[in-house]
Image (cartoon, rainbow, N blue to C red):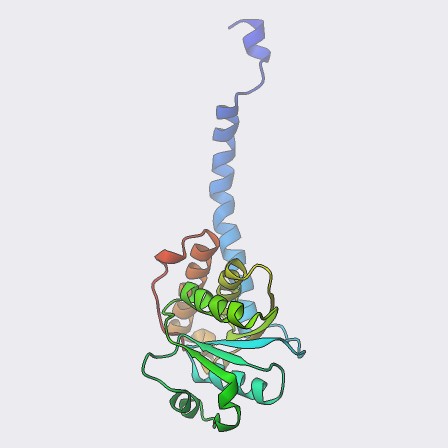
Length: 212
């Protein structure tokens, strides 16, 4: 080996080989820490900002979400509400009754979207509604564990719209001893996986589901 070869800096390929083992060790740590933060926020989300917005959107999947959205509308936090991802045959009276609410007083201010079957579909449906009504700010109501993915998809679909998260912690997570139940960990791990797919731009690989 010549003196020039001995003192030559490592090639890009060799540097890459030396970094790969460290990345392989670091990735699981990053995923575990990320999941821990995800679980903490699902169990104890930040208090929502209680200011008025141009609209409220509810991503369906649990009756508490609809009840919360209707209550916020009745309290005057927005002039209109969209319930996205409703059953194709469900009317407002049916949806409100299932949530233990009477929507008669706000019926003229509530729209129902029935096309969405996924979170990305919710974002598309909500974007169409926003562009029709020219809303510049939205209060987003969904389950606490679903909020990160919902905001991610909505920001992509509505880059110029302010989003105010209003997370609802479902009874599944509020129940005593919730974290001792395998089904709860399955729910959280599944949603975390879907969130990571969405972050990577692979939302289409996340199977549609009805969230509790």
